[in-house]
Image (cartoon, rainbow, N blue to C red; front, top):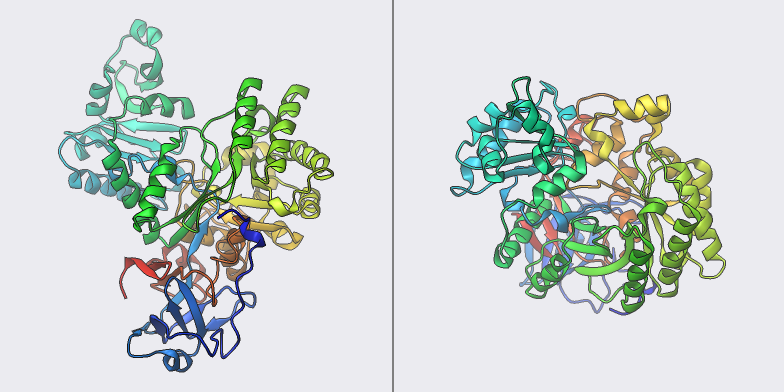
Length: 564
């Protein structure tokens, strides 16, 4: 596909009821007696929907959809169940996560330490002998209601004594069992001299007063990267199955598309692999991704990236897999800031960021920029306004991702430039004490959901999963609506309505990815991505929203999870 999708118009179906033309063929499937939350331009609620091939054909009453059917149409009675469009995560590092997915026990949204241990044990019991048990991020002790104590060496030995165990909490720290220490060649006990001389992972081990390992390793991102070097290799054949397993899990929580921003540690062959799976008709998740996989820090890194930008073209894929942007990290010294600290780039840093963004604009590239703090965002907007005078960025849909502390004034600058904002739900896991200590009550407005909603800026919701944050979209929706962390604490004073939050997780995210004419709503002509729910998102008590689970998930007219 060589044309930017945002410029492609879907043919308008002549209206006979809700989208069917007089010449239209009969649907392959109709779904009747449901509550179809279309998330169309009017947020209309319909009773039934018809699908032909991989696209929605029409919506309307059950009687109207029955009238479209012929002898070959499959009729499914939804029994009053609620249906929503397939959910879209606008910031999910899913390809980076697939390598060891079959080893993983995911703890996304789990609010009990005891339950977390049960999940870990059940996963370990289900694995073949000797296979490592892992949980690679997406959770934090702060989310547990019963106890937020460290996992201990004894606990992890008890749940899986015969296999290495590595349990990673976000990008902060990790826990391991005796078998893992043995596999890594790290002694469980070390005297004072040995501890002082320790290097690499051995220096990250937390020990008690006697020098014995507690099971915990500190060191944040560098520690995790060091640990990964010692993980068992995965064959290409096993990697294909890992991708399929990971994507099925995402389908099981209602996701049908993600915007993958590459990032540090990504193996680019992962994108080639999902293209191969898609070509075989076996991909169940749409993946739109960026040109990344490294962290440019030096002028030489910048020149290498510029050469790659100039040698590549965006939008050459299809509606299942496509390369659509540069970022989220394209020149770390310019924009890669943190939860509390801004970047203060020097003149050379700004120069190389300008060259990268200029090359992107010339090549017709969208750009995604990781920027959290107002000072960092100001540097970005100053540079973008400068470039916009030469190469307008509005049609390129450049985005600021995370933007936790973006101000109302900056949102107005974003609106005038025609840029977009990707907000994330990672505060939902709790552990916000450092943020409140740094910013005070202003932390209740990070990210500024209501301000963004009222600004007129195009924005959407994502997670920043799979390691740095949880990935369940219903947890994200619950957080955006209630303002609560998983531990029940109110951490967000700027909340959204159910309608606003659902739009920000479907139709709005489709726009960010140039896919608004294909996904993001249930309406005629769009790809038939939808989720049938076990309860009514629009009506259940707010605190039940995070507990919603799909009964079935459909991608392109094919049920990829569950059954109806």
